[in-house]
Image (cartoon, rainbow, N blue to C red; front, side, top):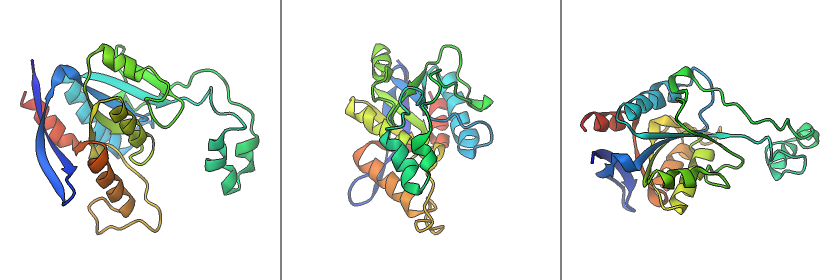
Length: 224
């Protein structure tokens, strides 16, 4: 039984706690969420890609999750209001329902799924909402998820929260996700580059799980 000793960070109330968690490799999966953004994204190429290579080399289970709104994007959808009509985009509310064919994700070659790696479609922010992700992971006796993808403040975050609700331990790789700052939350003096990203990490490390980095994850796998 191979064990992975991974350096992690979490928030203990009075400050960050730096520790190691021991994970059974056979019960740990590498989960890639909404990363079908093509080539050139630095968080994909410099963060996710090397971590994925190391995970595959170690024999870790890998799963993908992607957005597919082909069966849920309707003229009456509240999401059309939130992301469109209230911003003055009347077209968002009036356009017809989309084609019903399944969405085909477009991944960078550096993280293209292998033939045996499942890629689950989701219709909401969380990859655990009315999908077969939990069923699949339980079939493979997975207990811990190494989470990467997009966005730190939206779908990836909600998917990680959904994972905890289904009793999975979650470790988020900080440099394998991004979250756009608002104009009034940008602060280059912060390590994270802005208040939104800092607070999202703080909240994650307090109520959701642990964080680590791509380099720490790769280094830990090489020690097995």
